[in-house]
Image (cartoon, rainbow, N blue to C red; front, side, top):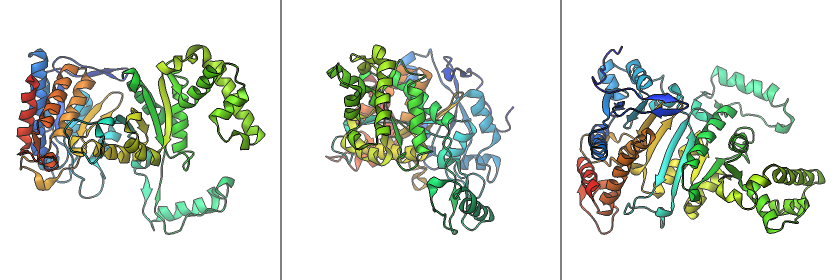
Length: 474
């Protein structure tokens, strides 16, 4: 079946039903060591995961690791420029769940990013990035412990789809001419806008189906959280990009108020319900005035629309959501993208799950990771309906490769996410406990040690893993 890789002789396949994994006690899990510092990170991370599974289940469960190749190591095995061999793609498809270290950016044409390629090949549409603070981790923020968010980033469309044309190319010139002469003039709202002739051109596709399946995963996740964390915030720049990012917001609300009607309330609906709870005799117009402070300056037609909205909400959900029942529902709201960067710093405790598009999510997840200690402590998962790949979120840092120096926290915590995804919560909790204790004790790698006050000795990558395992017994 495979050209240059061999599956373990023991173990069983993970299968999927309705988008969820069915995990045996002896799953076969493909792993990609990763490039650069992957040579150090993977052995340390595997040691921690294996020790946690053994301690949690006393030998009744075991991961059977299956080594596959992607990146520079794949070129060593399969030949020059063979960064993404078919063997590895077939193995991931066959076994469903995989984990990987950091991957290089390929030299030459064809594949711009191995990470993006894997997401698109397997339709891993949800990039999930938890950002949670571990006590003792150095942070530039005064109150990093208040931030505990999970970012759901749409993974397969937006500008990351990579449909663009170079400035001056024949296709770019033809497209600009077509837009300037035909499409833009035919669309009155664009006025006399024109694209400069010396522009490069890119396409930003945002689909209803792609947006709603991401929102569905985010809301489903919120249902599993404690009541005080059951909130989903749709992050967008819809005030500028109305038909892409604005549509993402609208489609998210549509899903929440149809498919999850019994479980969700929108922020605006909560205002309408709360106004009536505080004043049962409030008129539709006064209720509308409270939810739209600029109501009196609006046209009569717009005022009528808002009054109709108020009436529609009260008719549709007062019985199921009124009289404060909405407080036990998942709150779905939205925030402008640039605002949320400020909000996670000034009001970090007010957010739980942030659902957004590809580019916004890329920026936002790294910014949030910086608050809680940096990408060295930032895990990530890419999840689809029949496949999931867990990954370190930082780069390859080749100058540190082989030095047993770098922080394995990102890959270890990605392993925690994988164990939780598999339903092996006991093992995941052991790792989180051990990691937290090691950091609190000042047993950390150089990147954290150099920022701690008072100073602490630096541990090697492998020693940090040993410290985590040691604290399983605390």
